[in-house]
Every structure is written in structure tokens, then in C-alpha cells.
Length: 92
Image 1 (cartoon, helix red, strand yellow):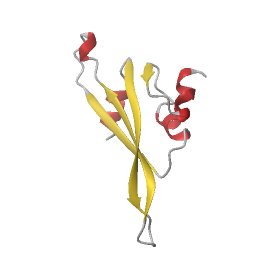
Image 2 (image 1 turned 45 degrees about the horizontal axis):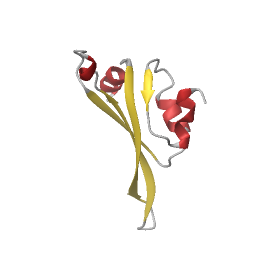
Image 3 (image 1 turned 90 degrees about the vertical axis):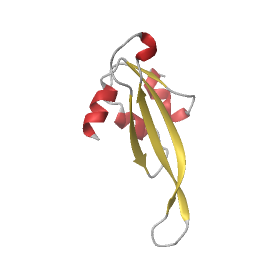
């Protein structure tokens, strides 16, 4: 997992997205909403030879602090949707 993350975050750009997912809430037999964060490196359309890859991370909520932490050392160009928790990626 660590090697894949290093490869994905070493790219010049990456695509970031989040997906709310139902997960079992411990102890009560019901579900709650967690979040699966996805970061994709695929530079083939730009003529690069690096292998495409995807790195996933799970969190128990959808707070913007999670992508902020995941991308704290990323220096390339992020591409993400208009989720309000992503605004810090663009210096807004």
C-alpha cells in the first residue's frame, strides 16, 4: 500500500474523488456512512510512460481534513470535483 501511494503521489497530476459508503456501526447492528477516498495517477494521455495506479484511503467521515492530510506532500496539480472539502487543494 505504501509503495502504491508513493507512486501515485509522485505524479505531476492526480485525480481525487470521494465516495460515501455504508459501513457497519459497531455494537448496534446498523450502518453509518463512511468515506472511501480515491487518488488516481494516469499520465498516459499526456504521453508519459509511468504505470497508472490508484490509491484508496478510508475514513469514518467526509471531513476535508482527510484529503488535506492525504495530499499534504503532493506538489503536482490536483483534479477534483466541487466538493467543499476540496477547496484547500486550490488555494481558495
